[in-house]
Length: 313
Image 1 (cartoon, rainbow, N blue to C red):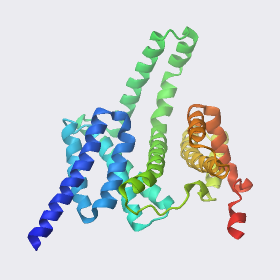
Image 2: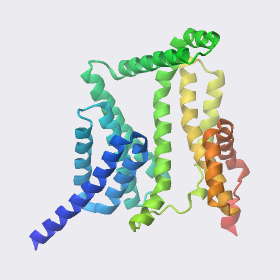
Image 3: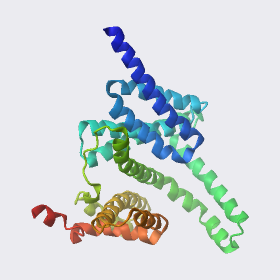
């Protein structure tokens, strides 16, 4: 009997490694899909393979390191994406609220990023801050050369070069907020995809209900107002802190705004092709992005979906 159990466990682990291995290899050859393929693989691993998922997770991270040819910062970034999905799966298994799931998954991914940054900068005998500063400087120099090769006007190039140090200073200090915002977007996208994964895998793990009725906690609006006040009246240090806070909160209110849009698309029974077209326009038009963020922010007062009235009825 133990031999049969061991054989079944071996088959389960082998199948899990095959699934995650395909996701890792696909991400290695097609980097632009890694933001979805690796988290979805991590999510599937946790909800599908149960007690064997930890073994598969460790083996997958080793596979990522092997395909990276060395312990590079990309190794930790890709591992962080896989662990992000794994943390989402753990949250699904524990039936945590959606807000706790998002925070937990983001923290897991950020821990992997920070560990990778620390490890790689130590290999170069640099501190983490010095390493980030150096990378930002290199990228800004490349951007300046790109502008020159594109034939941009000398006035624009001069304005960029004159403010070079200021841009570098601000960008280095805004990177944590930018990374957090991008990680929040990755969790949101993979949360949307998880319903499709549940249907195709015939597993039962999604428990959040319709996300188009989600609302951000009401107290967040006071943080947003506080950041806005600091941005107007504070000095340089607090100014960057307030901008960082606003970047993160704008991401959160974008989620609420897009939930409102999705709610009315569903209510008005928009056809699928029209919804895809509208979402594509929102993605490329900055003005519409700010409009969506505004919808989410003012929803606390305007209650665009009339959710409380619906619940009362």
